[in-house]
Length: 358
Image 1 (cartoon, helix red, strand yellow):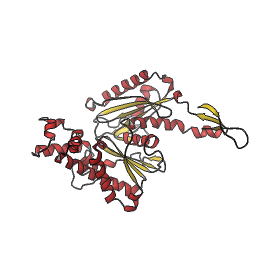
Image 2 (tube, one colour; image 1 turned 135 degrees about the horizontal axis):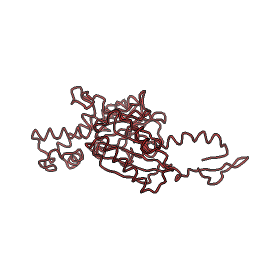
Image 3 (cartoon, rainbow, N blue to C red; image 1 turned 45 degrees about the vertical axis):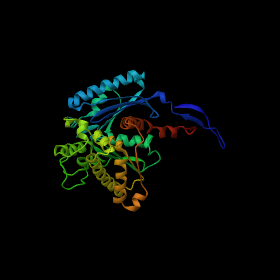
Image 4 (tube, rainbow, N blue to C red; image 1 turned 135 degrees about the vertical axis):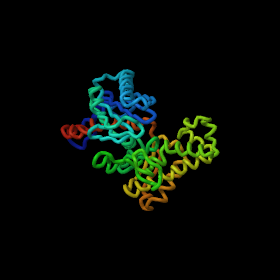
């Protein structure tokens, strides 16, 4: 903290005004996803000082991905010019089932080889600073609360739609993790009884029907059955090159197959979110993730289904909007876990200094 002057007084000694001296501490944030790994360095206010984005290359295995990530973290510190003594910790987000309290990654459906990895122990051993590990969606949810559309909202849900589907829940101003820290596995609610098998072992999960890989599987099947689509021209003979981004692009250009696939996925997502609205009664639902770039086609269908499948009184009091944060949201949120730990001691400091005001 640093003094910036004195405040007004209605009697007695004028209070000392303090503000954060943001350059005296920094945190690193990591977001490892199926396709990309994003890293940020933030100051004590959460401002991003420097960021990097690289391909994850999960096929290389867990050990190699971690090794590459560590090299990038060191490069980020070096390029920033920040002294290592000012680094307060590392927040590490990963798209999987994570025990926040123990810092263990139990399972990553789209990252093979990440079963029961003691990430907190590994990272702290490597960098010698406090480390917090959580699911990327919960990290992105914290970013929405601190820097995004949910700054003034205490009860909201963040839904991420990409290679996987997940949700982060804020209730009464705090992130909700559940009894064992596993809350938010939104992608594994069943929405179709006889649906396809999900990688979790169940059938008809939302993720198996509406995630990016699910859309690609549906399009490949249709093309293999001879359905006419502009997607053929986009991928030529290489059907393995088909991506969710190409499907979204084709749908925007009026391709019937792509539009129908995207529209059906949006209906499933809207159905799932309507369950969250009825169950949790949030004031706000923020939708993020790579699939949001589907724009009006995806988003308007989601909102329509939420409206028709939610209790009218619940929908009347909820706002549904796309995220306004950039792709670094989860990485920034991961770093913010460290900042939250730091500022938990601030109230105690203020109790001891009744003559200060922030």
